[in-house]
Length: 196
Image (cartoon, rainbow, N blue to C red; front, side):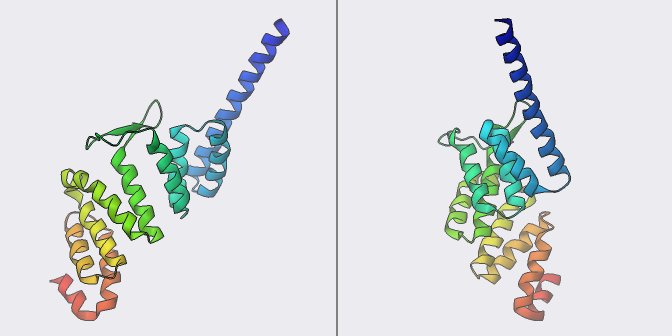
């Protein structure tokens, strides 16, 4: 009997140490910028513990390395247990016992993945889902930024320019790069319009 108890204690300690060892390896890989390595550790960890924390971490790493389909899969898994029927604008999902994430930040990451995959219909649907959130929290121009990026991808450069210019006025400084990209297609007239 004592032997069985000892085996159980050693097994528990071993499993816990493996789990914390992977956690430190994951954190070190993310901190060093090696997202591919972090994903491989997260894959192994999620096999044993498919917690929301690890799914969220893996999805973020997948976004960084351009694995948008896989990131969408993980974001969907995160949202499965969450009811979106009566969603509050500032609803949160618990990622771990110490942290939570605003549901709309996950939706925006999905929007970004759809955009990068060129799935503009899905991006527009996700944008429509985010519209109430953007209307409530649009002090930094996120709505204009995404309207501009979607218009750009669809080839509506004039609309893209207007939206991105509005977003840059609200603090979306990355829009200046997007405006410059757009202006290359329209020549000097387009650039001079922005300067005025």
